[in-house]
Amino acid sequence: MPYLNILTNQTLEATESEILLQAISKICAVTLGKPEEFMMVSLEESQPLMMGGNSAAAAFLDLRSIGLPEGAQKELSAKLCHLMGESMNLSADRIYINFQNIERENWGWNGRTFAG
Image (cartoon, rainbow, N blue to C red):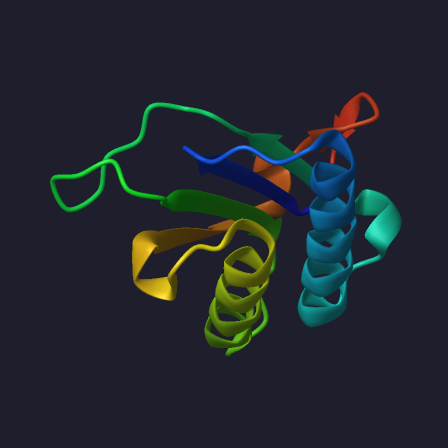
């Protein structure tokens, strides 16, 4: 049920994108304490994106999950910024991350919600 969308003005080769998505999926699942088979990650590359008045390399990450463990945001911010820096040559000060804790009744899957 966790979902992470990455929006960036950078571009990766197809194999690099796959490696990045796999690494991010694992990091998020482990840090959130969720089964990776429920983790969803998407990557929107080469998007018009401006930060601080310029279009230098940047990214916006939007993470949504049912139940964000206390302190997970700080740990995920450090890990995700590091990985994005290595994978896309992004400076951590050019990455914003939004964390959203979603109520179980507001997340649907398999014809129902996680509230039952």
